[in-house]
Amino acid sequence: MRTTRHKLFAAAFVFATAFVSTASASFDWRCDSCMSTYDYCASQPDASIDACVTEYNICAGRYNCPYMPI
Image (tube, rainbow, N blue to C red; front, side, top):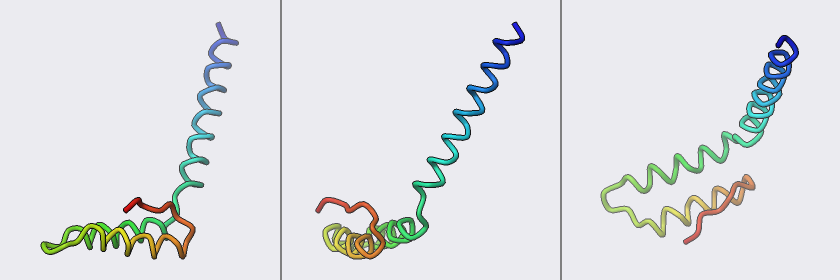
C-alpha cells in the first residue's frame, strides 16, 4: 500500500512539473501583447477584422508568434 501511494505521489509530481514547465515555456508576453492589440482593434465599433488580423500578423512576425489566418 505504501509503495502504491509513493508511486502515485511521484507520478502526480512528475505530471505537475511537466505541466508547469510546458505552460511557462509556451507563454510569451510579446505574443500576448500582439493578441491584446488585436482584441483592442476588434472591439472598436467600426473595426475591420481583416485589418485587425493584418495588424496582429505584422506584430506576430516580429516576435515569431503564430499567425492568424485571414
